[in-house]
Image (tube, rainbow, N blue to C red; front, top):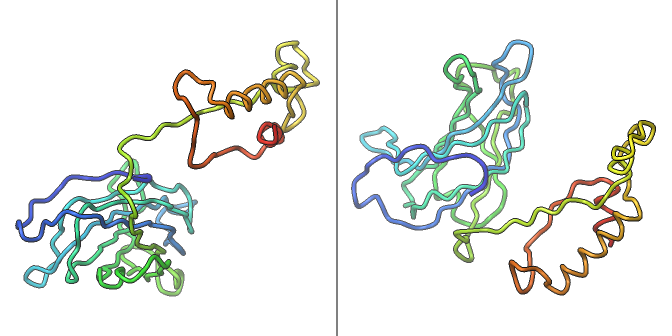
Length: 237
């Protein structure tokens, strides 16, 4: 769910393992300490549920690792993860922030332990301050924090999703390339040719009437487009 991956799974006492949905959206990091020379850090997070055992936090279940954001002091994460556990009130959500390093071990930047009971009320976006570790200072990074929210599933997520990737119709750049027209290649954000417009209109009719061999009726939850003139023209068609 979302970007990132799950790393391993730790065996815990059976009474701690109660399956359920516990979904967190990790939204963004702010004021990340600088660990690299000549550039900002390449931050990513690790997150997992934990519980106090003999005054020490013990991991419960799997660990989530997000994608990294290169050279970014205020990265947007926009990652969702389902920990697949029904957490108890004494659980904590532990989050660790690292700077990726391809040659050595990743640098530990900060962490926070969030009581799960603080995430039980609603889906409001919450901000939690992060404890500084090996890099940065309160003076240099006074606003080092993470934004997140809990997500309550109204239905089980689908096991499979179907993606339809649609390319734009013939553009003026395509036409110039096929005719070796160097001057026609210079312009930025080329629009559709007349042929490209007709191709878009033809696709629209197929889309509306479900004339596809893969489905009787083409439906979708959302569409993603690149904001170029030809994409906008295709959308209008």
